[in-house]
Each structure stands twice: as C-alpha cells, then as structure tokens.
Image (cartoon, rainbow, N blue to C red; front, side):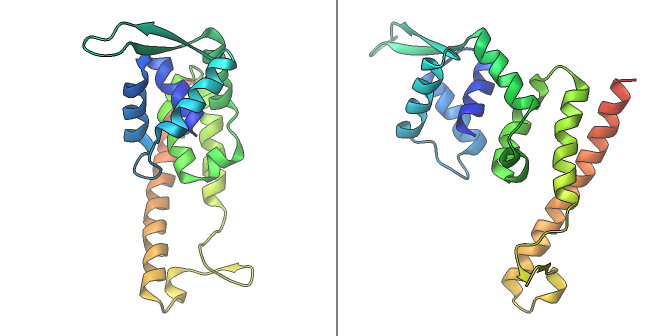
Length: 177
C-alpha cells in the first residue's frame, strides 16, 4: 500500500520527501500513520529497484532537500500494479482506497473496469464480521447493539460502494463503445 502510494503520487509530479509524506498521510494516515522509519526505507527500496530517483536541491533556509522523481520503469511498475492488483488490494478496504486513488492513471477504460469488476465480485459475496459456524450473521440476528452497529454501518457503506461501482462500470463500458 505504501509503495503504491509513493509511485502514484510521484506519477503526478516530482515531490520533496516531506511533501510526499504529507500526501500519503492525507490519504492513509487516518488508518496508519506514516512514520519516517517506514517511509524512507520504502523510498530507498524503490530507488534501489530503479523505480524512482532522488536529486538533491539546496534548501531555501536549512539543509539540502531531496526531490523524488518517478523513472520510466517506475511508471511502468505503477501501471502494472494498477492493472493487476494483488487480491489484498481488492479485499482490504484501506489498500482498496489507495488503489482507487490512482486508478485514473490507467489510460484504458477496459483495464479500469476490470479492476472495478474484481471489487464488485468481492463485495457481492455473502460476508459478515460475525458467523454462526460457517453462516454469516446479519445485523438483525444479533442482540449485541454494538455488533449490530458494526454490521449496519458496513451494510450502508457496502450499498453505497456497490451503487458507485455499478454506475462507474456503466460509464466506463459506455466509453469503450
């Protein structure tokens, strides 16, 4: 998720490390704070893999600043990750939101639609946070008001996302015709 966010933001424009950190925190920080001890090793891995380059600029007031730029290979890797996301990026909501934030970079509406169809198929499978054996429980079956709340909120969120997915897929399907 972090590497995808780094690649995605750098696809938009070269960024200083601290600006990149702010962008990532705005996207994912409400779930997972972005620590320097996590971000900078990820940047180094991507740099070592040839997916981004770091250039040093003189600082306006203090120490030199590092500007990160996506390489051509980094752009190709972003496109690959967007077109062929790992299953976790489809099923985990936080990973999904990160993927979704950059899906516009895929130029092909059919490729975008293929990713959305994977998410749609996942959401259409019966699921719950709570089970009776192998059977998913609905909110109406629970006496616990807090667990019922979890399922009620999840159901409303899923319905909204399903509606958005179906509308967006219809729009993308219309572009290809």
